[in-house]
Length: 99
Image 1 (cartoon, helix red, strand yellow):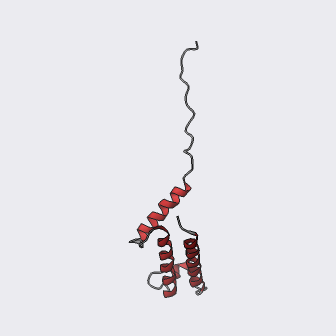
Image 2 (cartoon, helix red, strand yellow):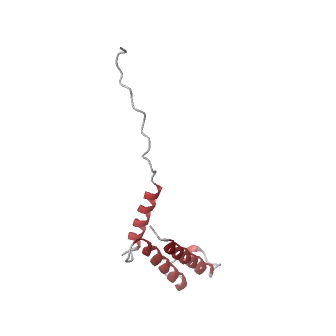
Image 3 (cartoon, rainbow, N blue to C red):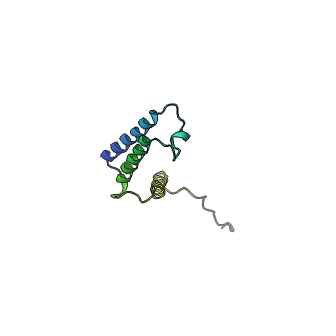
């Protein structure tokens, strides 16, 4: 669970990503995120955001972006899981002769 200080760091890094994107108002997201032409400032902002997120959950960076995503989606699924198990169908009463 991220500390309040880590949460502030992630929020600041996310704002830096938005700021880097805002520096190119005429560009579409497809253009900004083209791996061959992504602006260096945006690459750096995303790298800083990745480091801030990684620090919330482990001392070392995730080895790959895929491993980071898998971890984060699993954590999200756990947060979204209901606190109590879903109620199953009502119990069936045994059929038999009335006494």
